Structure formats: structure tokens, C-alpha cells
Length: 128
Image (cartoon, rainbow, N blue to C red; front, side, top):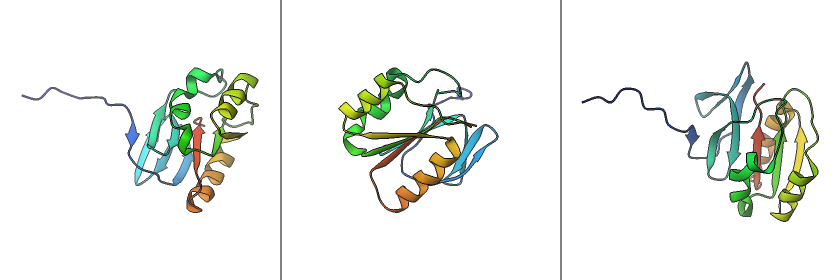
């Protein structure tokens, strides 16, 4: 017997370039996702971050859990560049990652280039 609609946590189990962004979502791997994304070594995950909301360590727990496979974390902060809080930058440094905040558009473009170069890159992309 059918159980109806099952909503699962958004996850693409691989690494893929971002083909498009804007209008509340992203396109990648012939799929689309509405909302923010974490592009990590384990795949592309839906993320709860919103433009203008506080950026704290708790929001980046999944990133920190995979820090051993990440050298550079690109943080797309939305339409405008926002500095990362000192505590968050310190957590990234302690985990062995460098972090670079930039607009989401710039982060998408930089992520795609670094991914094509097979670099140990990850991206936290706040939807625009």
C-alpha cells in the first residue's frame, strides 16, 4: 500500500559543478534545488542557511565534519559579501581549512573552476 509522499533530506551523492543559480535555487547535474546548498566531498546537500541570518559554527557542522578532505571553503554569503565572524573563521582554521567569503555568484564561479582543477574545495552557498 502506498504511503504517500516521502520527503527526504536533499542530497546528491557526488561532486558536480553548479550550472546556474538565482531565483531562489541552483541547477546542477541535470537537477534543480530550491534553497541553499553545501557542496562537500560527500556530495551536494540542502542547507538551511538564509541570506542575512547569523553565520555561526552550528550552521557549518556538516562542513566541519568533512574538514579533513577540504583545503578551501568558499562561502557564498548571498547577494553581498559578508565577513565571517571571528569564531567561525577560527573554527575553520582549527580544522585545517582556509575560508573565503564572497557573494554567492562569485563563490559558484570560483567553486566550478577549482572543482575542474580537482582541488580539495567545498562551497557553502546561500541562495539568492
